[in-house]
Length: 94
Ligand code: HEC
Image 1 (cartoon, helix red, strand yellow):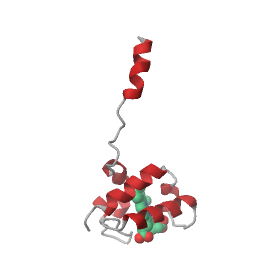
Image 2 (tube, rainbow, N blue to C red; image 1 turned 135 degrees about the vertical axis):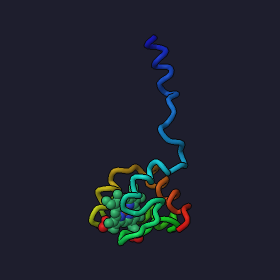
Image 3 (tube, rainbow, N blue to C red; image 1 turned 45 degrees about the vertical axis):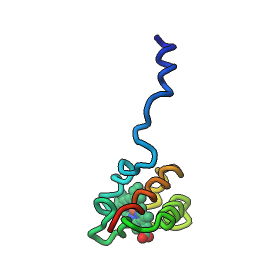
């Protein structure tokens, strides 16, 4: 029984399909607007270049640029997750 469980463990599916960033991106909607289209003072993310988004997120995470909240937020994501977020928002339309 235990052996069977150990055998099955690596087969568990990831919570999210790689390449699809919606689940991650939803955490940003509260401030950056639904789908990254902001209606307020916080910048929109939708349709910005992937390169810009990834650079900005990387700089917030490393502390190279400092914001009010983004440093703390960016630190919560891995390289792969930041790449997925950047790709997802870059693919939205404004
Ligand atoms: C609590 C509100 C809040 C949340 C949640 C939030 N952001 Fe931000 N974001 C901001 C603010 C405010 C700024 C402006 C910089 C600062 O003050 O930190 C910003 C700036 C940015 C910028 C730079 C935009 C530019 O034009 O310079 C990017 C990229 C970004 N956020 C991505 C994200 C992503 C991706 C998420 C979700 C993982 C996210 N943010 C979640 C508030 C938020």
